[in-house]
Image (tube, rainbow, N blue to C red; front, side, top):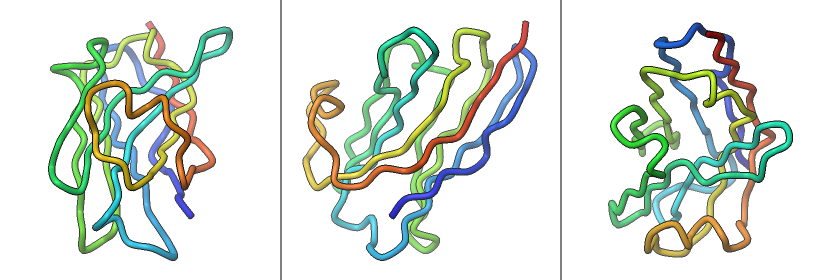
Length: 123
């Protein structure tokens, strides 16, 4: 199971750190990524990190978001800086054992999903 936390409401230009904690399994052999879904829009892959260290970022967040892992805490983080109103969405983490080869990783079904956490950015 995955559990997200850290969402909230911030003003444009602010920062948030989302956490994705695993229970019942370890991230050691898994790729973990963050998705977001805004009302009226398709779900979008935001960032992902594989067990081999491959990292992918969507163009819309490059230079502003950073994904990182803490193997001791079995947690993956999404550090979000310089937030914009268009970043407003429900953010969910997901995991599977596939290696990451670009954005295609987000298209495949995932073994584990979190419940999502709301991020709201006001202008």
